[in-house]
Structures are given as C-alpha cells and as structure tokens.
Length: 201
Image (cartoon, rainbow, N blue to C red; front, side, top):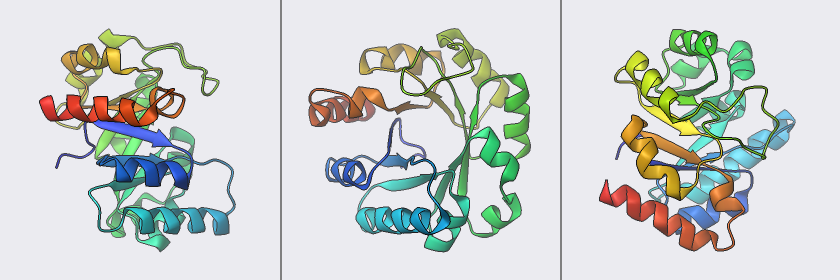
C-alpha cells in the first residue's frame, strides 16, 4: 500500500480513529492539541491499540516524544513542532515523517528534514482553524509537485470529495480530509465514497 493513502482523514479523537479503522481506512492522522506528555502518550498508545492488526496506519500529529515511546511508525509535524523536534531521535526510532508547508520558506525547511511526504495547505478556505495563510488554490499543487519531485504531496484544507478528481489531476498524491468527514451528515457514507475513489484511481 502506498503511504500516505490517497484518502487521508485527520481526526481528533479515539472514537473517530476506531470508526475509520472499522470502515477500512488505510491512513488516519490523530491530531489533538494542547495535551501534556502523559496524556499525549496515553492517547497515542490507545490509538495504536485500536489500529493494531488492521490495515490502518496511524499518523501521530505533533507529539513526537509520545510517538517514539509508544512505538508508532508514522509522524506528522507542523513547522513550529518541526523546529522543536529532535529529528535524529525521530529517525533513529524509525518513524516516517510528514511535514506541513504553506509557503516557499516552509517548503525549504521541510525539504531539509528529508520528509517522507510534504503537505500543502490550505488549498481552499477552511473554517476549522484560523489560518494566517491565504488559500493556496489548485494551481499551487502543480507547482509544488514539480518542486518536490518523487516525494508524495498531500493536499489539505477545505477539500471535499467533489474536488478530489481535480486535485489529483493537479498533481496531489494524497488528500487530507477533515470536515468533509467529521462534520458530514453521514460520515460513514462519505468515507465509503472516498475509499471508492481511491480504489478506482
């Protein structure tokens, strides 16, 4: 299986991790904010227990120390977290690393870390978190993909299933999805739509 999968949901709770795992999702990012070290380790450990023995690859957002201690295999860092992280320890632990980018300077910083994928966002306007960056737009995907070459490119930010074909055509290898799943009236049906698209690709 490729990593990350073409459909890459980002969720904030163990309930969502369990729900998506049962639906057969291949890559799930757990993104929870402002946890202390003990709570971070607990939620990462619990999430890994949920996905153990399944097809799901659990990506830990931010908490690289917890990821190392809990034995996770996949990690995603934003730029601020990347600046504070011990990349040597992360690599020695065998963690695969994805990095968020929003502009040229951040892309340079990300590439210096030799990431396993680069995320570009927000592609569209998103209400989920206040962004200091304007929407990138679909053409930026093509530009970014040319610049990073064979490194997988993940598009994120305000993306709905209806945008998927256009975004993949622009050069994205994967689409990270938040509200289109978690705020959907029928999340399970929406996930199946995304998974069907992945299989058709």
